[in-house]
Image 1: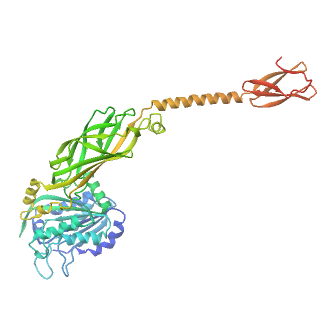
Image 2 (image 1 turned 90 degrees about the horizontal axis):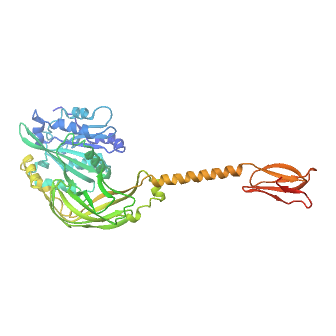
Image 3 (image 1 turned 30 degrees about the vertical axis):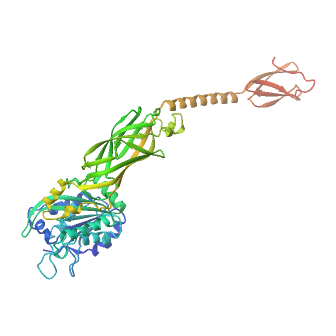
Length: 494
Protein backbone atom coordinates (compact mmCIF):
# COMPACT_ATOMS: atom_id res chain seq x y z
CA UNK A 1 0.00 0.00 0.00
CA UNK A 2 1.38 3.40 -0.94
CA UNK A 3 1.11 5.82 1.98
CA UNK A 4 -1.14 8.80 1.24
CA UNK A 5 -2.00 9.73 4.81
CA UNK A 6 -0.37 12.13 7.23
CA UNK A 7 -1.01 12.87 10.93
CA UNK A 8 -4.32 14.56 11.58
CA UNK A 9 -2.56 17.46 13.29
CA UNK A 10 -1.15 18.50 9.91
CA UNK A 11 -4.66 19.42 8.78
CA UNK A 12 -5.60 21.42 11.85
CA UNK A 13 -3.93 24.73 10.99
CA UNK A 14 -5.31 24.61 7.45
CA UNK A 15 -8.80 23.98 8.78
CA UNK A 16 -8.73 26.54 11.59
CA UNK A 17 -9.34 29.64 9.49
CA UNK A 18 -11.75 27.86 7.13
CA UNK A 19 -13.82 26.43 9.98
CA UNK A 20 -14.38 29.90 11.35
CA UNK A 21 -16.07 31.05 8.14
CA UNK A 22 -18.66 28.33 7.42
CA UNK A 23 -19.90 25.08 8.92
CA UNK A 24 -17.14 22.58 7.97
CA UNK A 25 -17.40 18.86 7.16
CA UNK A 26 -15.11 16.22 8.65
CA UNK A 27 -15.18 12.85 6.86
CA UNK A 28 -13.80 9.88 8.82
CA UNK A 29 -13.31 6.76 6.69
CA UNK A 30 -12.57 3.48 8.48
CA UNK A 31 -9.65 1.39 7.19
CA UNK A 32 -9.14 -1.14 9.97
CA UNK A 33 -8.91 -4.90 9.38
CA UNK A 34 -12.66 -5.46 9.55
CA UNK A 35 -13.00 -3.20 6.48
CA UNK A 36 -10.83 -5.51 4.33
CA UNK A 37 -13.63 -6.69 1.96
CA UNK A 38 -14.69 -3.10 1.22
CA UNK A 39 -11.15 -2.39 -0.06
CA UNK A 40 -10.20 -5.70 -1.69
CA UNK A 41 -13.45 -6.55 -3.50
CA UNK A 42 -12.92 -5.21 -7.07
CA UNK A 43 -16.66 -4.49 -7.39
CA UNK A 44 -16.92 -2.66 -4.05
CA UNK A 45 -18.90 0.61 -4.32
CA UNK A 46 -17.40 1.80 -1.02
CA UNK A 47 -14.94 4.43 -2.28
CA UNK A 48 -17.29 5.82 -4.97
CA UNK A 49 -19.94 6.23 -2.26
CA UNK A 50 -17.61 8.30 -0.06
CA UNK A 51 -16.60 10.53 -2.97
CA UNK A 52 -20.18 10.97 -4.17
CA UNK A 53 -21.48 11.83 -0.68
CA UNK A 54 -18.74 14.41 -0.08
CA UNK A 55 -19.32 15.90 -3.51
CA UNK A 56 -23.05 16.24 -2.85
CA UNK A 57 -23.04 17.69 0.67
CA UNK A 58 -19.97 19.97 0.61
CA UNK A 59 -20.80 23.26 -1.11
CA UNK A 60 -18.46 25.98 -2.43
CA UNK A 61 -17.00 28.01 0.42
CA UNK A 62 -17.27 25.18 2.95
CA UNK A 63 -14.25 23.48 4.47
CA UNK A 64 -13.63 19.74 4.24
CA UNK A 65 -11.22 17.55 6.20
CA UNK A 66 -10.94 13.95 5.04
CA UNK A 67 -9.20 11.39 7.27
CA UNK A 68 -8.85 7.63 7.59
CA UNK A 69 -9.13 5.98 10.99
CA UNK A 70 -8.65 2.67 12.78
CA UNK A 71 -7.09 2.64 16.28
CA UNK A 72 -4.17 4.79 17.35
CA UNK A 73 -0.94 3.04 18.40
CA UNK A 74 2.62 4.16 19.01
CA UNK A 75 4.04 4.98 15.62
CA UNK A 76 0.62 4.74 13.95
CA UNK A 77 -1.59 7.72 14.87
CA UNK A 78 -5.30 7.62 14.09
CA UNK A 79 -7.11 9.36 12.53
CA UNK A 80 -4.71 10.34 9.73
CA UNK A 81 -5.49 13.27 7.42
CA UNK A 82 -5.83 12.60 3.72
CA UNK A 83 -7.16 15.94 2.52
CA UNK A 84 -7.97 19.41 3.87
CA UNK A 85 -9.25 22.24 1.67
CA UNK A 86 -11.95 24.82 1.12
CA UNK A 87 -14.37 23.85 -1.63
CA UNK A 88 -14.14 26.02 -4.71
CA UNK A 89 -14.16 25.56 -8.47
CA UNK A 90 -12.52 22.11 -8.49
CA UNK A 91 -15.20 19.41 -7.99
CA UNK A 92 -15.13 18.05 -4.45
CA UNK A 93 -16.05 14.57 -5.64
CA UNK A 94 -12.98 14.34 -7.87
CA UNK A 95 -10.60 15.56 -5.16
CA UNK A 96 -11.96 13.11 -2.58
CA UNK A 97 -11.89 10.22 -5.07
CA UNK A 98 -8.24 10.96 -5.84
CA UNK A 99 -7.36 11.22 -2.13
CA UNK A 100 -8.80 7.78 -1.26
CA UNK A 101 -7.87 6.01 -4.49
CA UNK A 102 -4.81 4.31 -2.92
CA UNK A 103 -6.23 3.97 0.59
CA UNK A 104 -6.16 0.39 1.86
CA UNK A 105 -6.60 -1.49 5.11
CA UNK A 106 -4.02 -0.54 7.73
CA UNK A 107 -1.73 -2.87 9.65
CA UNK A 108 -0.36 -2.61 13.17
CA UNK A 109 3.18 -1.22 13.49
CA UNK A 110 5.97 -3.75 13.10
CA UNK A 111 3.93 -6.57 11.62
CA UNK A 112 1.28 -7.75 9.21
CA UNK A 113 -1.61 -7.96 11.65
CA UNK A 114 -4.53 -5.81 10.54
CA UNK A 115 -5.35 -2.71 12.60
CA UNK A 116 -8.17 -2.65 15.14
CA UNK A 117 -11.03 -0.14 15.34
CA UNK A 118 -11.99 2.53 17.86
CA UNK A 119 -15.06 4.50 16.75
CA UNK A 120 -15.17 6.67 19.85
CA UNK A 121 -11.53 7.67 19.49
CA UNK A 122 -12.17 8.82 15.92
CA UNK A 123 -15.24 10.89 16.81
CA UNK A 124 -13.53 12.53 19.78
CA UNK A 125 -10.57 13.45 17.54
CA UNK A 126 -12.89 15.06 15.00
CA UNK A 127 -14.88 17.10 17.54
CA UNK A 128 -11.96 17.95 19.80
CA UNK A 129 -8.87 18.22 17.59
CA UNK A 130 -10.30 19.31 14.24
CA UNK A 131 -13.37 21.34 15.17
CA UNK A 132 -12.06 22.35 18.62
CA UNK A 133 -15.57 22.81 19.95
CA UNK A 134 -16.75 24.80 16.93
CA UNK A 135 -19.83 23.89 14.94
CA UNK A 136 -19.53 21.33 12.15
CA UNK A 137 -20.75 18.03 10.73
CA UNK A 138 -18.76 14.83 11.29
CA UNK A 139 -19.41 12.01 8.81
CA UNK A 140 -18.32 8.55 10.02
CA UNK A 141 -18.18 5.78 7.39
CA UNK A 142 -17.81 2.38 9.07
CA UNK A 143 -18.75 -1.30 8.92
CA UNK A 144 -20.04 -0.86 12.49
CA UNK A 145 -17.49 -3.16 14.09
CA UNK A 146 -16.18 -1.34 17.15
CA UNK A 147 -13.39 -3.54 18.53
CA UNK A 148 -10.46 -1.67 20.13
CA UNK A 149 -7.51 -4.02 20.77
CA UNK A 150 -9.48 -6.72 18.93
CA UNK A 151 -11.94 -6.79 21.82
CA UNK A 152 -14.72 -9.25 20.98
CA UNK A 153 -17.11 -7.68 23.48
CA UNK A 154 -18.62 -5.56 20.72
CA UNK A 155 -21.83 -4.96 22.66
CA UNK A 156 -19.86 -3.29 25.46
CA UNK A 157 -17.78 -1.25 23.02
CA UNK A 158 -20.89 -0.13 21.15
CA UNK A 159 -22.48 0.97 24.41
CA UNK A 160 -19.41 3.10 25.10
CA UNK A 161 -19.66 4.57 21.62
CA UNK A 162 -23.34 5.41 22.02
CA UNK A 163 -22.76 6.85 25.48
CA UNK A 164 -20.47 9.33 23.74
CA UNK A 165 -23.29 10.23 21.36
CA UNK A 166 -26.26 10.32 23.75
CA UNK A 167 -24.47 11.60 26.83
CA UNK A 168 -22.16 14.19 25.31
CA UNK A 169 -23.24 17.81 24.93
CA UNK A 170 -21.04 18.42 21.89
CA UNK A 171 -23.18 16.36 19.50
CA UNK A 172 -26.52 18.12 19.03
CA UNK A 173 -27.98 15.84 16.35
CA UNK A 174 -27.04 12.33 15.26
CA UNK A 175 -28.32 10.31 12.31
CA UNK A 176 -27.45 6.85 11.03
CA UNK A 177 -27.79 5.59 7.44
CA UNK A 178 -27.58 1.77 7.31
CA UNK A 179 -26.78 0.75 3.73
CA UNK A 180 -26.83 -2.60 1.99
CA UNK A 181 -23.39 -3.21 0.48
CA UNK A 182 -22.48 -6.89 0.01
CA UNK A 183 -18.72 -7.31 -0.54
CA UNK A 184 -16.39 -10.33 -0.49
CA UNK A 185 -12.75 -9.92 0.43
CA UNK A 186 -9.78 -12.21 0.78
CA UNK A 187 -10.35 -12.72 4.51
CA UNK A 188 -13.81 -11.43 5.36
CA UNK A 189 -17.18 -10.69 3.83
CA UNK A 190 -19.74 -8.04 4.73
CA UNK A 191 -23.34 -7.25 3.90
CA UNK A 192 -23.69 -3.63 4.95
CA UNK A 193 -22.10 -0.29 5.65
CA UNK A 194 -23.11 2.44 8.11
CA UNK A 195 -22.79 6.18 7.52
CA UNK A 196 -23.22 8.36 10.58
CA UNK A 197 -23.80 12.11 10.55
CA UNK A 198 -22.99 13.90 13.80
CA UNK A 199 -23.92 17.59 13.99
CA UNK A 200 -21.75 19.49 16.44
CA UNK A 201 -23.32 22.58 18.02
CA UNK A 202 -26.57 24.35 17.18
CA UNK A 203 -25.18 25.70 13.89
CA UNK A 204 -24.08 22.22 12.89
CA UNK A 205 -27.57 20.86 13.62
CA UNK A 206 -29.15 23.63 11.55
CA UNK A 207 -26.76 22.90 8.68
CA UNK A 208 -27.58 19.17 8.82
CA UNK A 209 -31.31 19.94 8.83
CA UNK A 210 -30.80 22.16 5.79
CA UNK A 211 -28.93 19.35 4.02
CA UNK A 212 -31.79 16.94 4.69
CA UNK A 213 -34.36 19.46 3.48
CA UNK A 214 -32.39 20.23 0.31
CA UNK A 215 -32.29 16.58 -0.74
CA UNK A 216 -28.52 16.64 -1.34
CA UNK A 217 -27.98 13.62 0.94
CA UNK A 218 -30.84 11.74 -0.70
CA UNK A 219 -29.17 12.20 -4.08
CA UNK A 220 -26.56 9.68 -2.90
CA UNK A 221 -28.18 7.79 -0.01
CA UNK A 222 -31.77 6.91 -0.75
CA UNK A 223 -32.37 5.10 2.54
CA UNK A 224 -34.16 7.14 5.24
CA UNK A 225 -31.94 8.20 8.14
CA UNK A 226 -32.40 6.58 11.53
CA UNK A 227 -32.51 9.24 14.23
CA UNK A 228 -30.24 8.71 17.21
CA UNK A 229 -30.44 12.18 18.74
CA UNK A 230 -32.38 14.22 19.74
CA UNK A 231 -35.31 12.11 20.88
CA UNK A 232 -36.95 14.74 23.05
CA UNK A 233 -38.07 17.32 20.47
CA UNK A 234 -39.61 17.48 17.02
CA UNK A 235 -40.75 13.89 17.47
CA UNK A 236 -44.13 14.34 15.82
CA UNK A 237 -45.70 16.75 13.36
CA UNK A 238 -49.23 18.08 12.95
CA UNK A 239 -50.87 18.47 9.56
CA UNK A 240 -54.36 20.06 9.42
CA UNK A 241 -57.02 18.07 7.57
CA UNK A 242 -60.00 20.41 7.87
CA UNK A 243 -61.57 23.18 9.93
CA UNK A 244 -65.13 22.70 11.21
CA UNK A 245 -67.70 25.36 12.25
CA UNK A 246 -65.41 28.34 11.80
CA UNK A 247 -66.63 30.47 8.87
CA UNK A 248 -63.92 32.58 7.30
CA UNK A 249 -61.08 30.46 8.75
CA UNK A 250 -58.89 27.96 6.88
CA UNK A 251 -55.61 26.22 7.72
CA UNK A 252 -52.77 25.00 5.49
CA UNK A 253 -49.14 23.96 5.97
CA UNK A 254 -46.34 25.58 3.98
CA UNK A 255 -42.61 25.31 4.59
CA UNK A 256 -43.02 23.88 8.08
CA UNK A 257 -45.32 26.74 9.13
CA UNK A 258 -49.04 26.43 9.79
CA UNK A 259 -50.90 29.29 8.13
CA UNK A 260 -54.32 30.26 9.42
CA UNK A 261 -56.06 32.42 6.82
CA UNK A 262 -58.74 34.49 8.54
CA UNK A 263 -61.28 36.83 6.98
CA UNK A 264 -61.27 40.32 8.61
CA UNK A 265 -64.90 39.93 9.69
CA UNK A 266 -64.40 36.44 11.21
CA UNK A 267 -65.32 36.60 14.87
CA UNK A 268 -65.69 32.92 15.77
CA UNK A 269 -63.81 32.57 19.09
CA UNK A 270 -63.20 28.80 18.71
CA UNK A 271 -62.18 26.67 15.73
CA UNK A 272 -62.52 22.91 15.67
CA UNK A 273 -59.54 21.52 13.77
CA UNK A 274 -58.99 17.95 12.71
CA UNK A 275 -55.32 17.03 12.36
CA UNK A 276 -53.12 14.19 11.20
CA UNK A 277 -50.58 13.37 13.91
CA UNK A 278 -47.46 11.80 12.39
CA UNK A 279 -44.48 10.13 14.06
CA UNK A 280 -41.25 11.61 12.64
CA UNK A 281 -38.82 9.48 14.71
CA UNK A 282 -37.80 6.72 12.32
CA UNK A 283 -37.05 3.96 13.29
CA UNK A 284 -38.92 4.27 16.60
CA UNK A 285 -42.54 3.51 17.26
CA UNK A 286 -44.23 5.65 19.91
CA UNK A 287 -45.59 2.74 21.90
CA UNK A 288 -47.38 5.04 24.37
CA UNK A 289 -47.48 8.71 25.33
CA UNK A 290 -49.79 11.24 26.97
CA UNK A 291 -50.63 14.27 24.84
CA UNK A 292 -51.24 17.88 25.80
CA UNK A 293 -51.14 21.03 23.69
CA UNK A 294 -51.39 24.77 23.90
CA UNK A 295 -51.27 27.67 21.49
CA UNK A 296 -49.59 31.05 21.68
CA UNK A 297 -51.25 33.41 19.21
CA UNK A 298 -50.94 37.19 19.18
CA UNK A 299 -49.42 37.06 22.66
CA UNK A 300 -52.25 34.95 24.12
CA UNK A 301 -51.28 31.55 25.53
CA UNK A 302 -54.19 29.14 25.83
CA UNK A 303 -54.61 25.36 26.16
CA UNK A 304 -55.85 23.37 23.20
CA UNK A 305 -58.59 20.85 23.99
CA UNK A 306 -57.73 17.47 22.43
CA UNK A 307 -60.27 14.74 21.69
CA UNK A 308 -57.82 12.16 22.97
CA UNK A 309 -54.88 12.51 25.31
CA UNK A 310 -53.33 9.13 24.60
CA UNK A 311 -51.34 7.87 21.64
CA UNK A 312 -50.64 4.18 21.16
CA UNK A 313 -48.43 2.20 18.76
CA UNK A 314 -47.79 5.12 16.42
CA UNK A 315 -45.30 3.82 13.83
CA UNK A 316 -42.87 6.12 11.97
CA UNK A 317 -44.56 7.98 9.13
CA UNK A 318 -47.96 6.67 10.13
CA UNK A 319 -50.63 9.37 10.52
CA UNK A 320 -53.24 9.17 13.25
CA UNK A 321 -56.37 11.37 13.37
CA UNK A 322 -56.50 13.91 16.20
CA UNK A 323 -59.37 16.33 16.81
CA UNK A 324 -58.99 19.57 18.74
CA UNK A 325 -60.68 22.81 19.68
CA UNK A 326 -58.45 25.87 19.52
CA UNK A 327 -59.08 29.47 20.49
CA UNK A 328 -58.60 32.07 17.78
CA UNK A 329 -57.22 35.55 18.56
CA UNK A 330 -60.30 37.36 17.23
CA UNK A 331 -59.93 40.14 19.79
CA UNK A 332 -56.50 40.96 18.37
CA UNK A 333 -57.62 41.12 14.75
CA UNK A 334 -57.43 44.80 13.73
CA UNK A 335 -60.61 46.49 12.53
CA UNK A 336 -60.70 47.05 8.78
CA UNK A 337 -60.51 50.84 9.35
CA UNK A 338 -57.48 50.58 11.68
CA UNK A 339 -54.06 51.81 10.65
CA UNK A 340 -52.67 48.24 10.74
CA UNK A 341 -55.43 47.03 8.41
CA UNK A 342 -54.99 49.94 6.03
CA UNK A 343 -51.26 49.28 5.84
CA UNK A 344 -51.99 45.64 4.95
CA UNK A 345 -54.61 46.44 2.30
CA UNK A 346 -54.34 44.05 -0.63
CA UNK A 347 -52.02 41.70 1.30
CA UNK A 348 -52.14 40.02 4.72
CA UNK A 349 -51.72 41.25 8.27
CA UNK A 350 -49.67 38.56 10.05
CA UNK A 351 -49.99 37.62 13.73
CA UNK A 352 -47.13 35.21 14.59
CA UNK A 353 -47.49 32.40 17.08
CA UNK A 354 -46.91 28.70 17.69
CA UNK A 355 -48.56 25.47 18.76
CA UNK A 356 -46.74 23.26 21.25
CA UNK A 357 -47.55 19.56 21.50
CA UNK A 358 -46.11 17.82 24.55
CA UNK A 359 -45.66 14.06 24.87
CA UNK A 360 -45.31 12.91 28.47
CA UNK A 361 -44.61 9.38 29.75
CA UNK A 362 -43.20 8.67 26.30
CA UNK A 363 -42.21 5.09 25.56
CA UNK A 364 -40.26 4.43 22.37
CA UNK A 365 -39.59 0.99 20.93
CA UNK A 366 -37.40 0.05 18.00
CA UNK A 367 -39.48 -1.29 15.15
CA UNK A 368 -39.15 -5.00 14.46
CA UNK A 369 -38.61 -4.35 10.76
CA UNK A 370 -35.59 -2.16 11.55
CA UNK A 371 -34.17 -4.82 13.89
CA UNK A 372 -34.45 -7.41 11.14
CA UNK A 373 -32.84 -5.11 8.62
CA UNK A 374 -29.91 -4.37 10.91
CA UNK A 375 -29.46 -8.08 11.65
CA UNK A 376 -29.29 -8.77 7.92
CA UNK A 377 -26.81 -5.96 7.23
CA UNK A 378 -24.60 -6.59 10.27
CA UNK A 379 -25.00 -10.26 11.25
CA UNK A 380 -23.85 -11.06 14.74
CA UNK A 381 -23.62 -7.39 15.68
CA UNK A 382 -25.75 -6.53 18.76
CA UNK A 383 -25.97 -2.90 17.66
CA UNK A 384 -29.80 -2.77 17.24
CA UNK A 385 -30.16 -3.11 21.02
CA UNK A 386 -28.09 0.04 21.37
CA UNK A 387 -30.56 1.99 19.26
CA UNK A 388 -33.02 1.81 22.16
CA UNK A 389 -33.19 5.39 23.48
CA UNK A 390 -31.84 6.30 26.90
CA UNK A 391 -34.27 5.74 29.78
CA UNK A 392 -34.07 9.45 30.65
CA UNK A 393 -35.81 10.36 27.37
CA UNK A 394 -39.41 10.05 28.59
CA UNK A 395 -40.86 13.27 27.24
CA UNK A 396 -40.68 15.34 24.11
CA UNK A 397 -42.07 18.55 22.68
CA UNK A 398 -42.98 19.40 19.12
CA UNK A 399 -43.33 23.07 18.17
CA UNK A 400 -45.32 24.12 15.13
CA UNK A 401 -44.85 27.77 14.06
CA UNK A 402 -48.16 29.45 13.23
CA UNK A 403 -49.00 32.54 11.19
CA UNK A 404 -52.50 33.99 11.57
CA UNK A 405 -52.95 35.86 8.30
CA UNK A 406 -55.81 38.35 8.10
CA UNK A 407 -56.61 39.36 4.52
CA UNK A 408 -57.92 42.89 4.02
CA UNK A 409 -59.44 44.08 0.75
CA UNK A 410 -58.74 47.37 -1.01
CA UNK A 411 -62.22 48.86 -0.33
CA UNK A 412 -61.39 50.75 2.88
CA UNK A 413 -58.10 51.94 1.42
CA UNK A 414 -59.79 53.17 -1.75
CA UNK A 415 -62.47 54.91 0.30
CA UNK A 416 -59.83 56.57 2.44
CA UNK A 417 -57.82 57.60 -0.59
CA UNK A 418 -60.97 59.02 -2.18
CA UNK A 419 -61.73 61.01 0.96
CA UNK A 420 -58.19 62.32 1.13
CA UNK A 421 -58.34 63.36 -2.52
CA UNK A 422 -61.64 65.18 -1.92
CA UNK A 423 -60.17 66.91 1.11
CA UNK A 424 -57.10 67.93 -0.87
CA UNK A 425 -59.34 69.28 -3.63
CA UNK A 426 -61.31 71.32 -1.09
CA UNK A 427 -58.12 72.66 0.45
CA UNK A 428 -56.79 73.55 -2.99
CA UNK A 429 -60.03 75.38 -3.81
CA UNK A 430 -59.86 77.26 -0.53
CA UNK A 431 -56.24 78.18 -1.14
CA UNK A 432 -57.07 79.43 -4.61
CA UNK A 433 -60.01 81.43 -3.28
CA UNK A 434 -57.83 82.88 -0.56
CA UNK A 435 -55.06 83.83 -2.94
CA UNK A 436 -57.29 85.26 -5.72
CA UNK A 437 -57.33 89.11 -5.73
CA UNK A 438 -60.82 90.63 -5.20
CA UNK A 439 -62.09 93.92 -6.77
CA UNK A 440 -63.90 96.59 -4.70
CA UNK A 441 -65.71 99.73 -5.88
CA UNK A 442 -65.10 102.63 -3.47
CA UNK A 443 -66.68 106.11 -3.85
CA UNK A 444 -64.60 108.95 -2.42
CA UNK A 445 -66.06 112.47 -2.66
CA UNK A 446 -68.45 111.18 -5.36
CA UNK A 447 -65.51 109.85 -7.34
CA UNK A 448 -65.54 106.08 -8.05
CA UNK A 449 -62.32 104.23 -7.40
CA UNK A 450 -61.52 100.55 -8.18
CA UNK A 451 -59.25 98.82 -5.66
CA UNK A 452 -57.87 95.22 -5.64
CA UNK A 453 -56.93 93.23 -2.56
CA UNK A 454 -56.34 89.65 -1.43
CA UNK A 455 -58.37 88.17 1.46
CA UNK A 456 -56.83 89.03 4.77
CA UNK A 457 -55.22 92.28 3.60
CA UNK A 458 -55.95 95.88 4.58
CA UNK A 459 -55.09 98.87 2.36
CA UNK A 460 -55.56 102.68 2.75
CA UNK A 461 -58.16 104.70 0.83
CA UNK A 462 -57.03 108.23 -0.22
CA UNK A 463 -58.93 111.31 -1.28
CA UNK A 464 -57.99 113.47 -4.26
CA UNK A 465 -55.38 115.24 -2.11
CA UNK A 466 -53.63 112.04 -1.16
CA UNK A 467 -54.89 112.06 2.38
CA UNK A 468 -55.93 108.77 3.98
CA UNK A 469 -59.65 108.86 4.66
CA UNK A 470 -60.30 105.13 5.46
CA UNK A 471 -58.93 101.56 5.44
CA UNK A 472 -60.32 98.86 3.12
CA UNK A 473 -60.41 95.36 4.68
CA UNK A 474 -60.72 92.42 2.23
CA UNK A 475 -62.01 89.00 3.40
CA UNK A 476 -63.18 85.77 1.73
CA UNK A 477 -66.73 87.06 2.04
CA UNK A 478 -66.35 90.66 0.82
CA UNK A 479 -64.98 94.08 1.85
CA UNK A 480 -65.35 96.44 4.80
CA UNK A 481 -64.36 100.07 5.42
CA UNK A 482 -62.46 100.68 8.63
CA UNK A 483 -61.19 103.81 10.39
CA UNK A 484 -63.27 106.23 8.23
CA UNK A 485 -62.07 109.80 8.92
CA UNK A 486 -64.70 112.03 10.44
CA UNK A 487 -66.48 114.11 7.78
CA UNK A 488 -65.04 112.12 4.88
CA UNK A 489 -67.35 111.18 2.02
CA UNK A 490 -66.46 107.45 1.58
CA UNK A 491 -68.70 104.47 0.79
CA UNK A 492 -68.58 101.04 -0.89
CA UNK A 493 -70.23 100.58 -4.25
CA UNK A 494 -71.19 103.10 -6.90
